[in-house]
Amino acid sequence: MQALFIGHTYIDVTMLADALPESDDKAVADNFAVSFGGNAVTACFACAKLGQRPELLTSLADDWLGHMFLAMAAKYEIPVHARNVHRTSLSFVRPHAGRRAILRARDDDYRDPFPMLDLTQCRVLHLDGHQPDAAIHYAKACRELGIVTSLDGGGLRSNTHELLLLIDVAIVADRLCEQMKLDANGMLDYLKSRGCAVGGVTQGEQGMLWYDRGGTVRRLPALRVPATLVTDTSGAGDVFHGAYVASYLARPEASWEDHFDFARAAATFKIQHLGNEAGLPTVSDVARIRAEYSAG
Image (cartoon, rainbow, N blue to C red; front, side):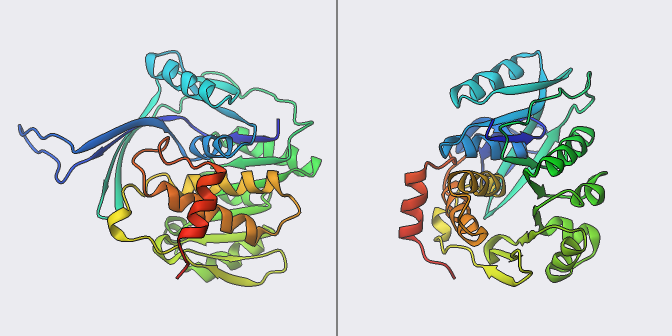
């Protein structure tokens, strides 16, 4: 495997609607999409769409949604290492006015231990903190083998502080800053204190504040996209993570600034499309976005 992604699978049902019905009311959505979901899961699919060969360790249920997910993974030639649950987790997503509201039903009662995988050919491990026992195990194993470890710090989890000690590239969300009562600069200092060689805080329209291996703090501004073209911001961060992993696999000699620049364009593509699958860019899509939009 080139890269291993560890996370929790959702099936996302995304609906565009001006308002949500209440009580006995009914309403008709303007558009909808059904796709795979989950932070590291979506990142894995993005990495695959960008031409790499990732593998995925994730939850899987023997139900019709689980079978649908396996069909999705097969389409992208992603080997799935299953950790069984009773039911597939489900998300209802409503993008609106540049934001998104999410209602989730999750089954994370894993019915068996995580599988033991051969990491001989692995070059990157990407985690989102789900499956805490598997995340810690594989982060330790990759650290011992000199394999790059990456974390999507979308929120505070039971293993976040311990896990960060094993992470090379930690890109976290504003939500984690809020939960830990830190501003963006304070979070960067915290990530440095945990030994993360590269760290950053994604801030939506403000782009990302991050530091490189030398500790220099810099800002990667968001690309300017007309508000009328922003359709669905859900999953943009996940695509960003999958894209910088793909960029690293394709050009390991490039700087992290280059990898993040590539990922920024990938995320910019995502927000213009409804649902996770439609928002996965190809390498040519990323090139077009980089040529079409400027930062600011």
